Figure 1 (tube, helix red, strand yellow):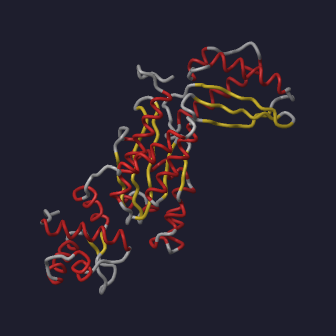
Figure 2 (cartoon, rainbow, N blue to C red):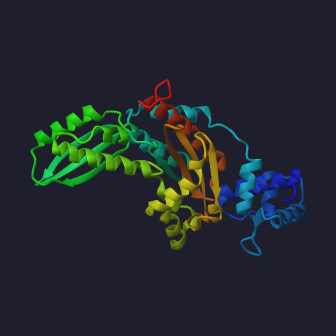
Length: 350
């Protein structure tokens, strides 16, 4: 692509910002009147035609003004957008919300999703912190009915899994609680190899439960992300880009079919270090479901120990200048919280 002149850069910035605000194609007359430009409509039309020829703008209809193309948005985000921090007042409000919340992973994840959706007016995506190697925190065994028992397993990173077990015979809650207490003492902080080294146990029930714990922890180790938290879906569906039912359904597939979301994260931001921002525009030719969308993603946590992902999905016409610093700031907050909660001063997981 040829180098843009200063005038072309200025016009591209104005067109992107105006289209973000109005969702209407931008014409030369509007640019002159709205921004008091010291150039004629004819000059602006010539420059808009040049930007269109470069692939940075497109014309939806013959008589309409121009709108940014995917490449236009990319050029704007990469070269023209002023990288600013969130205003201090907003930072203070968000920080206060987090430090007022209970120090629990689920509380932090839910709050992060809510804050991102509210600040960006888009869909937020937050995954719980996840480790490459799960470590046991505690297990609960709860008698439900007959021979069925609910097993609740919690890892040191805060991930929770539940499954229903069918035992050979009904067992009283008192005995189940005793088994859980003994396993909690024996396995605290252990990984799957550590627990396997302690097997078999003398008690048959303890041995069976331990085997299930190891299987569950191994499944967790194979996942690329932790539990997914979403918020703000109605924000996206209210945008004019998704007025057509087919367009809305296409965007919703990413959330209905979690394998698509996990594939997106695994092939993009999970290859980046914590703190970095990645912006995907129009699906980048890889995800048909996102062809009208943009996604801003970041990783948070303590690299090599426990990390998660957060981000925002909205129309390509999203406010990047507001969304990117919001995602960056919330990722930094969560990194501090997760590091304090799960990593000690030597860098080892608690």
